[in-house]
Every structure is written in C-alpha cells, then in structure tokens.
Image (cartoon, rainbow, N blue to C red; front, top):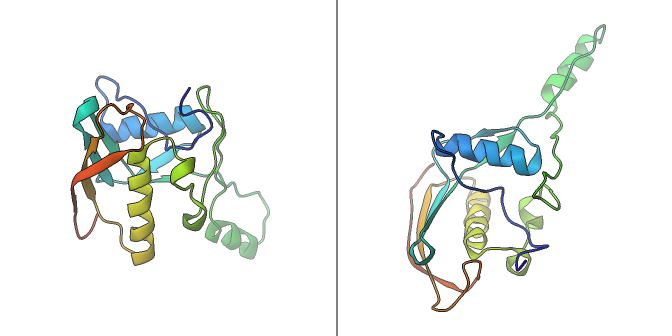
Amino acid sequence: EPCLGLWTLPAGFQECGESTGAGAKRETLEECHCDVDVHMPPYFIIDIPQINQTQIIFRAKPRGCSKQKRNQSEAAQEAIAAAPPPVLFKPGEETLETKLFDVDGMPRDEELAFGSIQLVLQKYAEDFDDGVYRCHHAVIHKHKGEKPNSKKFTVASYARSTLC
C-alpha cells in the first residue's frame, strides 16, 4: 500500500443517515478506540475535484475517564477534578498505530499520507501559534497523472474566517 506507515487523521466515509460530526466521532472511535467530543463548526473543508472528494475536518477533544474513589480527602478530590482526564486510545482494526502529538511534534510532510492533511496541519499550527482557531476552506488541484494520495498539488483557492 502506498501510504503504509505514514500518518493521517482519523477519517472515512459518512454513513447514510449520519451527520458529518457524527461520522467524525464514529471514525475516530473505530480507528483509535477514542471517544471524542467533536467541535462545531467544521475546522477545515477541502474540495479535491479531480478525485470527486470533499474532506470535512473537525477539531475534537478526547473524552477521558477519571473516577473518584470513596473516602478521598477534599483536597484529593479537587486535584482529580482539576487534572485533565486520561486519554484512552489504541489502534483499531484498520490502524497500525495511534498517537497524540503536541504541535511541535506533529508529523512533517514526508511522514504524512496525504497532501490535504499536510495543509490542515500547517494551518492548525498557525492557528495554535496565534491562539485563535479559524474555519478554513481550500480547493486543491492535483497535478495531472498523480495518484489520489499524491502530495503534489496546488491550492487553487483558500479562505479562512476570523473565528471558528
């Protein structure tokens, strides 16, 4: 497989009767065994006309599990409540590996399976550095003769909102 061993975001096809947000949640659960709260509106919409695709990317927050034990001191209960819950995830049947990255440690271009994800992560890093998450839209034109997963593309148009 041409993308074997390369990174991408959890993704897949939307089921009939399913919203895009519900599809993102389901795909993340299937591929990473991670339950997430999907942020609305979509973070990035990418049109790729040459392969008849529209990719809708959401930001999401993992749901963790944190249980309080009986007879804990009030201070211990407050510390547990203030701490971020642990994030539980593991590879699904179609996934080789799952990993959470901080912004500085995100996979770089040569480590990514798809050019569209390269663009999404670039804009995400910019938004993270700015402290503001915007909504993005791009139309990507694949170079003639390139495979659908090729990272050779041109951004034909790009727009972003002030806030998302």
